[in-house]
Image (cartoon, rainbow, N blue to C red):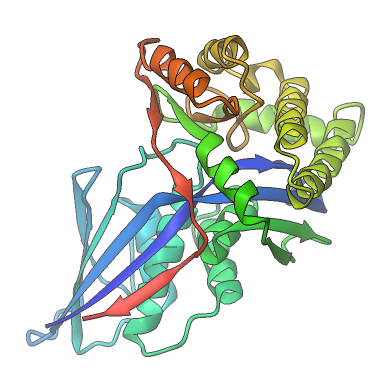
Length: 342
């Protein structure tokens, strides 16, 4: 038996999010890849029975599993995983047991579905003894969500998962991308890593009809579309702040981005997020931003005070808010998709 292991980070603090979509047309995003992310294990056996349903997928955290014919997936259960398997050919002589796990809650607005897809595609590439290229994997993962499953998806999550690090993404035209990984001063990176906190807001994020309402408003390119232009410029400002080693300026960009999201629609910043923001302000955090598109549930990124004691008090009080609100420990991920065999 052969085993392939693959992993990919998730994405937080997407400055300029909403602009990497078809309805924005063109965009700029700066995001952070963090661990823990997604882990995939593929056990490979000989398909002695020549069964067509030769792939079993186990989503360990969801306690779900499905047995599929990789050539004819039904997408009824675990559709992202089935979509990824169907994109790359599984040799008929092979039977696969695929295990997927993560310590990040599902639907927490940090691009978990994209990371799952990237990690699984990377493992399947190794199965067919093909070398993976981050750009190709990111494009393929985006195709799974948009073309195979017909879902709304920007391009930034797949890029963050495949490349890792701090990514500045310029989208001249959807879905094309030019990606630059930022390499910042070591001391700045250490301070950023110490200050960044991911807070889960107690319930899974749901896109719901709210996002369709926002998309429809943006499509008219009226007053609301001005917020998209602001978001693009904020991604540039965030990039400049990090390159200059100015985390205070970076935190201010986070806050401005958060308020741009609120201006798109007030319900994009939920009650739980505002409760966390109130405590962040109390303990002199430098920045905060709801992850992803925003809305009910999901998560928020905080850039805590430079003072370690203040950060500790802030997190302690956040963890007493109840309603399932809690810190999820994360750290910056220098690398993106990783694959190896045993």
